[in-house]
Image 1 (cartoon, rainbow, N blue to C red):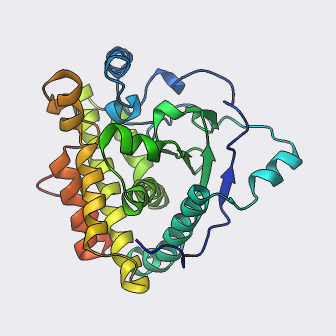
Image 2 (tube, rainbow, N blue to C red; image 1 turned 120 degrees about the horizontal axis):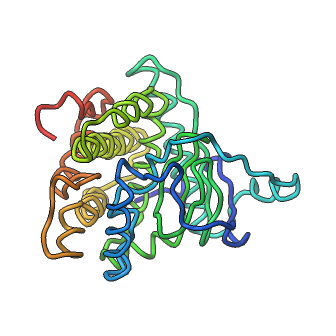
Length: 302
């Protein structure tokens, strides 16, 4: 992937080196991703035994929307330092991928949906930090918090992708960022709020999980839409890059993760979708380049 010529986003907060941010591994309102407390405990135990990222197993922190945003008081000097452009390669990469998503979505979202795109802010951290959705920890993986409209990324996750899942390559990492930005696009379109309301009234955990899967697959598709439109304009990808994204989508499919953790998959407990679903929806977005192709809620087949 050729990303050097991308514009670096100014909407990056670099909190790396600030320490763990205090607090524990908590979930506002006692739930995460539509899962009950009992399920969360079981998943955390599986994660402890296998070493698999618990956020991937239980749907990450994207859906933590109970309660109000938790304001973080930061002195002006610290805030100014956070806003300085990253100087390391990983930080520069993240800033440029984010900048490219901004350049793509601010153009295509109005054209395709009639809605203006308001950029998200990406928070880079190490170990832990505070988010509007509560405490962010490295073990949670990348996530989008709809309460403060920010993407949170512990940059060590890229190394974890290599070591635990055998996934590597610049575009695999870009796909992860684009997926979280996809959640922000859903937020801009008003989709997240509607889905969260439906999850609150869901009749069962299975039904809530199915809604989570549709949200996640849509974010995969939106990542594909970004990739298609970015490549059309900057010609930054080749076929090997697309394969990197597919490898990443496959490696973190719920079925593969559950089979690795417990030897079998339980589809009713899926929160992100199977490997096949995640790859298929990314390709759906990439082939069409159209936001409307990503309506997983009306699709006959997820």
